[in-house]
Length: 322
Length: 147
Image (cartoon, rainbow over all chains, first blue to last red):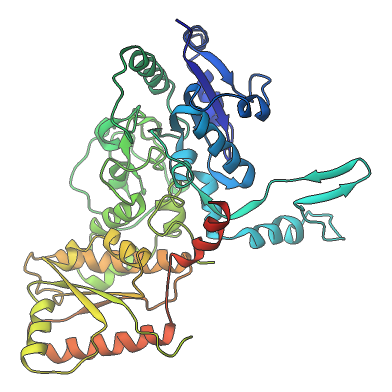
């Protein structure tokens, strides 16, 4: 029997997910042994035209990382969807927009203004901006079109499974890969839309810190003090996204005494991670009057950047108003 | 702004105070603008910010949250939760470019039918002045182009 075919692609993301795949270390050899890797631009020399010539559904599994923020991302997402039997949104960006999704706080014009006009260190007297098409002596050059709104993979194409995380943890990746190998052998697949490489509860469930009743008098930020390593970070006034984040990472950030930032996304059945966290944070403020509670709540400096650090593009409102 | 704009408002009313306040306004035959669709919740503290965001994302122009006065909560301190969520939600919505005043929090007791009627009319006029929100519209052009 021929080996199942695997494709990996990198859209709007930092490349960390590609590194995360290599974090499984020598097991990458097992991946190479189990799969026929037919497309992986970061590691192997394939071109888009190689994929274009493949028959539809000829790739068994595609691990797609990165958000969709330009026409190239979108073209390849659609192409790989057509060619793949199983499309996996791999990592926080493909799953929920990730850090690039925060670009949804502005639009293309504002981004271009900042990058090509307003940067103090910029030397661009002619006001040159990227053009979709440029004539040069050798012919016409083209650039992908940047969109106003960063989208998740599933806002662009049909997605079968999600492997969240920024980046997904190596042991979870390995777990997903072995599960896929097994599933392809037996033909028994997890239900469509499942999050893979996560555990059913929240990050708090995996966090070993001692948790008591949460009552906060003031919010603090990580640089302001050194938190007690034994106690729940949220109880110490740090906004830790643990209660609104699905388990799966092994609470690595909180173990290192840094609050969870929510990269694994919400637990099942939660529609909007940021809304849930906002609700949690506001509910544990300890003050005698509604006015004082409101005052303390209003001290959270950047609600969108805190509660939607990874999830703005997949949130209910998805972006700031254009 | 079109002159025939009728605001669509979702009202989350706590069943112990504000919903009864609405009942009192009705049984007292008070007149107020009909733009608000009331949704009865057990407590204003039950109004998850998700509900508010979903209403706005799905076409509401404004959202009213109404609950018992502080100290009067049937569940002792549910409305204190609401009091904390509201300013955070306002700040979040401001960051997302919504005008101040699209979401409103009011304490309305079961005896305050007049306050309920006045609040709904006032809030409707306020939203009318702000104009339609139409949140989904901003995605249409780009999504149609790339569909």
